[in-house]
Each structure stands twice: as structure tokens, then as C-alpha cells.
Length: 87
Image (cartoon, rainbow, N blue to C red; front, top):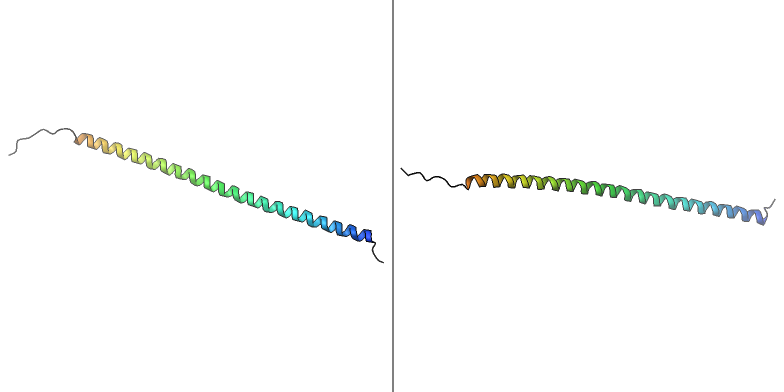
């Protein structure tokens, strides 16, 4: 027997609704994947910036220590020496 026009229209409508729901789900999944990827990149960038900051602070501390040691060494050699008679 032939299906009525109404039942065929309902089947087409149902199929269209399923496709629309699937497209929405796919779109949401793609958006979530992009958001996850962006969050991962941000976390990596922040970790790198923190590591760079720590390395810069360590280098500054080493530079300050070297400067202090050089100043101390220079200070001790800057004192006048006693003149000794040459023989």
C-alpha cells in the first residue's frame, strides 16, 4: 500500500530534524575541541613564561653576585700599598 502524503512528510521532517541535531552536535564538538586546544596552548605559554621569568631572575641574581664579588675584589686591591725601598 502507498504511504499517505502526511506520513511521508512526517518522515522527511523527522529525517531533517535528525540531520539538524547531528549538525548542531558536530558544531558543538568542533567548538569544544578548539576551546580545549586553545586552553592547552595557553597553559603551555604560561608555563614557558614562568620558566623564562625564573631563569631571568636566576641570571640576575648570579650577575648581582658576580658584581658584588668583583667589587669586593676590586675594593681590596684599591687600597694603597706601602712603598718598599728597591734593592
